[in-house]
Image 1 (tube, helix red, strand yellow):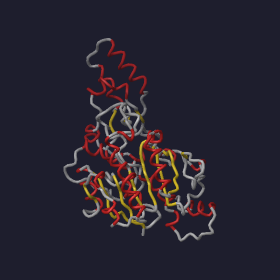
Image 2 (cartoon, one colour):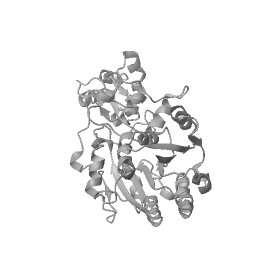
Image 3 (cartoon, helix red, strand yellow):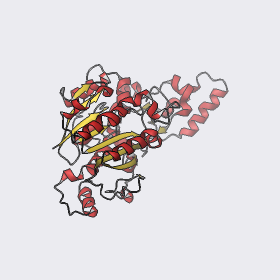
Image 4 (cartoon, rainbow, N blue to C red):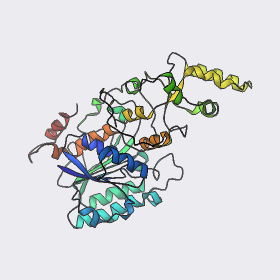
Length: 379
């Protein structure tokens, strides 16, 4: 049984990915500073796992007691995201806790020979160009880890959502990454156990959508005030479409680069309707925005985003096993989902990372044998 610690745990996306992986594993401790995220985590995974704590105050002595085999980390993305014009990388105060784990805690655990055998780090794609990434990779190699890096999006796994993310996997040097050339230090856009040509076409969005009545639809309608001022900036998708833009923590609060909205009237030409709206606006028609009503533009609901993130299973009729505690606002739900990970992408990475744990693999296995083991679990 692999014992894991989850840092920056949020609502438990990494926990969920591990629980769905092919390896018997358990999260023995999770850490996050956000009180609402911790509340959500508690109702879904129990009260004895999550610890509301400042990660920059954790010590090697405290963590050594867990004897963890695996660290799962999704540190703050703001220091590295292209959406933040003031991103400062490692010098950003929000990077301090991650630096503390890498520079202080992990070396101390390594000196005591109680450091984790495996690590998984998730962050925005901009992380790959940061000074933090180079420092992280260098430190891990000095501590005796082999490192594999990836840029992956759910689209390549058949999920109709573009969410390009940087992932780092690390395992102690006696363990290898099958099919990965560690000497080249390149960032792959596929998992070696899954050849690039194995990428599948994304499914239609309508497979992820709620069946909403008119009243429910109205509650997620994009307001006239927002459309009148910012309508031209939205990324508008159809239920029959096979893509959506990355959903961020600012969804419904921000317009540009915050996530797509749905046009429920699929038969209408979006461009033509907006052109008519702009023409009416230019002519001084104060009611011009009403011309957009026929498109029936709405936001994705939280439950729809949970499916796109594969936090809940979009392809079963079983009741949702993810619980929102009473009192969590709609704004907070969007924020917490936008801060989470795509569980299916991480699940596949964990399968690749922990391939030695999934079966008793003999020392004479070749890389091709390792790939065969992993491919047997792809579906």
